[in-house]
Length: 580
Image 1 (spheres, rainbow, N blue to C red):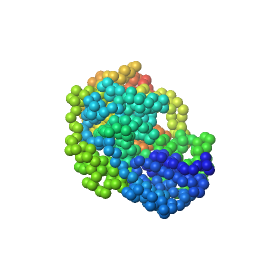
Image 2: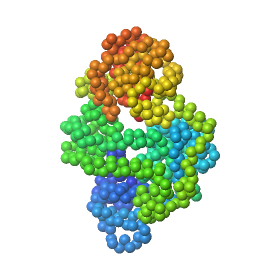
Image 3: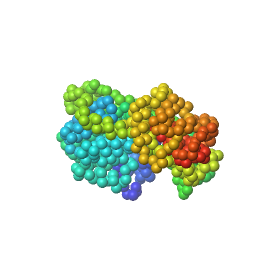
């Protein structure tokens, strides 16, 4: 195909820079394809949303030396204002204006997630958000929460994320295109390739971490209508979500070298490799893809192996990417607070050549240009409904059923099916939830203190709605290094209210360290053999196991193993919060 191509077009080329460095390294294989083209084959890379940094990065990554020279005569044929530039790699860069006159930008800073949901439902009902549109969220869980709330208010809405079944995703896109949906609640999984020219609004419940990503998403609206509403509703949880995604970047060199050493001269599956390297599965898989693109490893039957090719850790590039992403996060904070024209702000962030500087090109349509105040008023009845829905406590904490692969290589003789797993547990909520997430993050970040009354009452409601097959007879604690008052007071009050026997606290044989960032195998090795039931009178009945936070789930699993071996008939974990 390459030998007969008259022109190769790379659309949405900003992805090469935005995602190619770590999250989607296969985008960088485009350069390999270009090197295989016959000399002189023209290549066109296009994108609607890229600032000067992204343009330069894409031009650098795609430049191969195989591209045809750009004749000087072509420069005179360009329209004035496009500001062409020849990069060092021989790439001709053309820039155009980014203003879209149909977009009306605004920001509403509201005090809580419930206020944001109430405002959203009312705005769809009364036509402030006209026609049908997209509601973007930052997490998969939020798509379900928001879509469920909107449906309960009689609004035709559906969730859409990378976790949504392929057939359901296609059906949701079709329903939005046909006008059968008023709102598609989506993560960034809904993006490139989707085109509904008459989309009437785009709302963000939570700010994306980059002006480029934001403008790319809001640009789905107003393509074939005179006016489309674009509203940003930032949330208190945005920064924590940004930090989480930033933590998934390329690992430090020491960890990468450890992976290459483990794969030298052998083939290992990803689960087997996970036992040898302290990286979580998703981050490990992404790193392997990067190394595959770089030629340092390759995928073979049975897993991965090192190629033996010389490989250099590009620390400068990864540091530059991290710094650029940090600067873009600050730009999104500045967008929320800017006193000037919002469209002009975004165009300046994307280095629009038609905007000379701040204050020179106001759009006349955004809330700043029109002098419109933030839309802070919400319907009290809708607000109460949203508060009740988001305030509903309790999520399931599924038990572990299989030991991680390769534990024997870490000196832990556990494999296969867990013989006596915990029962399905409960948590008050996730740290990333729109409802309880903010309250739990605040609680766990505060100095250690007895459990607050509102949190305790919510946990009592969780217990009341649990629906266990056999009621627990006693309460036992996982020892806490950082929050002994919080966990201890919680267990004592639960025992008193529930008339349960206060069994006591598992003893800590040795320190297990923190589980944050650990993969399953490494975390299990950390916690295995750290807890004991010495001196506890269990009574033989089901036990309520209390802890403050579960991340990987292996501390609860190890505590359950110890309690079952000591005679407990069943273990029901109850934690304040689940990470993620």
